[in-house]
Length: 142
Image (cartoon, rainbow, N blue to C red; front, side, top):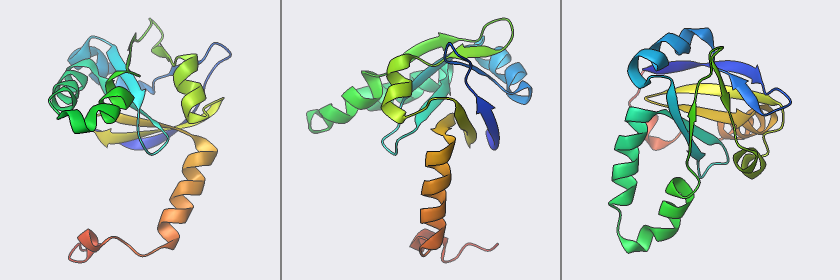
């Protein structure tokens, strides 16, 4: 399970260095093979390949009424592999779609990661935390 946030910078070629605390797990569980695709909230989802395959099956099984969402998730998916130094290439198309240029935030979200343009994430988090908490948190103890 992945958790935590890492501030990272893309290099000039669009490569991202996976934090060392995640590299061993990704190598052991996915052979360093990952899949990156769009998320409807304006970030990218980064899946270890076995988790992607489960997600892909669920999306592919959706009815025709969800065809556009299938296109968003499956049509934009890019398979990548960590190189010898733990870097992955984020395609120009996916970077452009999310506004990712250099400064990013990688969030562990359990079985996958979210990759955000850092400024976009900070703005969306500030907006979310200024509002009321969703009802699902009413009985949640902090």
